[in-house]
Length: 353
Image (tube, one colour):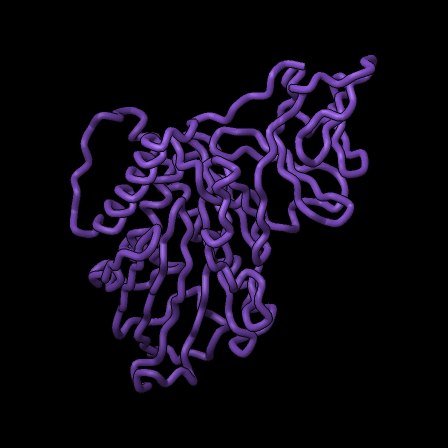
């Protein structure tokens, strides 16, 4: 089961073409996305109400889409406006439409009750589209449940081992105890690591001496349904606190969108200020994330296969699990609230034409 009354990222804005159709599955529901002549993004159920063929196999006609199987035509509201060979359109011929919001290059869909869609609940992914921050947008697909990836992002002690030669660089990260605060719809996690070498993915940000040592920080909000907004970086140990002249400052936005119960869409970026470096640094940071997130994917996929073999076998909880345990409780509470409020676990289906 998934939380329904929330915003899920379905795409980066550049993925949805000015012409043509785009499809992606979110929480088990196939979605069709396209742009109107004015550039507004439309999200419809990617399932014709007639014979359930994917509308994404059809074509755009103005601001409408025509099913490629039997030619039914639907407008941007999901209403059928034409049925070939019929003088009138059955009044219940329609497909579901979804509220859409675009913020800082992320395209969001609201998968629950449309009347409760609230843009005030959108995360502040400001560095995805800001003149003072540079990045390359990223996407990966995982064949694992999204909560296992949430677990990974909520416990940075794994950086010391999974990412020993990439994002981590020191076992001191695993030794540092994080501070965890409750915030609205999520958690704030702060981890500070003193007197460690700069990690490999900072290469190109600053000219580091071979014996350079930094005080590093990771401060991030992790909010429902699964979005990480993080300030990270470090300053040379010889510089006073607050002296940022030689510091490395980064901002990352990452979000997890369940595709199905066992697969996930992962949207991410790692942004830096232009003063820190140019296009080469932007590319270096992106390439480093791809390597590191593939390291994560390999580990989490192997973990998921083990869990599939023995789903009832209990795990051993440790102190490092505190943030992920708290977040799973937030997810469970949100699901329980929706159950009590009788939010449908599946959308209403349009009647057959």
